[in-house]
Amino acid sequence: MPVITAARVGRVPKQAAESVGSALPARLDSLTSLRFFAAFAVFAHHFTGVGGKTGYGRAPSIFPFSEMGAHGVTFFFVLSGFLLTWVYKPYEHPIAFYIRRVARIWPATLVAAVLAYYVFYVRAHEAVEWKSFIASLFLVQNWLPDATPTLPGNPVTWTLSVEILFYALFPLLARFVVRMRTPLLVGVTIAGLLAMWAVAWWSFDNLTPETARWVMRHPAVYLPQFLLGMTVALLIRRGLRVPLRPIVPLALLGVYVYAYFELRERLSPAYDAQLEYTLRPTLAVLAALIIIAFVQRELAGHKGVLNKKPLILLGVWSYSFYLLHHSVSRFATYEWGRIPDRDSALFTMLGMGLVILAMSWALYRFVEEPANRWLVRRIPARWRRTAPVAPDAR
Image 1 (cartoon, rainbow, N blue to C red):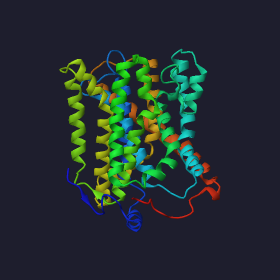
Image 2 (image 1 turned 45 degrees about the horizontal axis):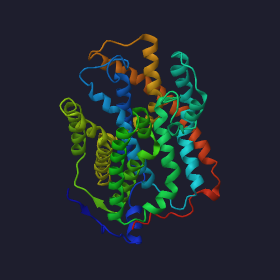
Image 3 (image 1 turned 180 degrees about the vertical axis):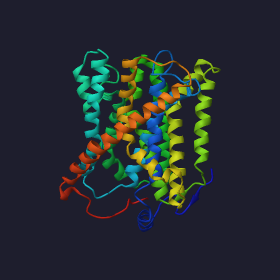
Image 4 (image 1 turned 30 degrees about the horizontal axis):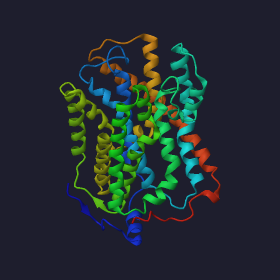
């Protein structure tokens, strides 16, 4: 794919990097809106289940394609790397960075855990394995190979266990990554995605299925997706531009999802396994292309539907939506039983989505945002950013 550059690919002078960075907005509304669609995709996956009697109700018109919604979290992982790098503050103290991250994610997580505890333990009549449950409250459950159940506490917070590793490494990682030459940075990123594929292949070929699944949930396995997001942010900041309209990567995603499920019926077991092993890296690349397309469009001054206030608000509430959706869907299943597997389930899914959205607004309005402001205001001045310097892109 041809690339138009506004700066040299190999090494960008410090002065040029700072001028490029200073001209770029910190807020990208289209990416905020896209967060909601990723969160809703995960909700659709949990609502429709994975076949059999799982989920609240299966709509044949979107199943099994809705199963791919589980990988909406891939978009979150790539987006995290992108956004943290996009607003990177080189002179901010790492402790201030950590406080900001904790302030944003942890208060809402703890409140949502109350509902999850009732639904997944009390209402489900399941015993609590306290080590695993407490680990989930501190978002380190993915490090436990014997966590009980496999996704303890609020199940969806396994992705936050991954994010915590990203946050822990970012202040150190960013110092090196922003100074890497573009060819080396791109090469390391590609190598990381290939390693992700190789780890999946090796794990399922050499380990028990249970252990292999734990390995593929381990936070370290997802670092290449985070690095991909960082790389995309730096390439755009360095002036790289790709002639890519948003419809192209969105169409590629649709074709890939359709082909993935259609091909699985026809491939031999060996090729089907390879399709599964390459799933995460492939979706990460598609997520990166979607981010590139929408960011470039916004930087060029084009405003689309994703820049409208209603969708931006949905994106703002999407984190709370993500935390609550699985608990609400599972509660409905326990309380009223599954609904018939027909397309009318789509109306139920949309109705449930509106209920969760109202709950999400309340969680954001009364917990997530107030707690974030309260904690951030208490960061000592000596730990705050001291100089408005953009990343040194080399």
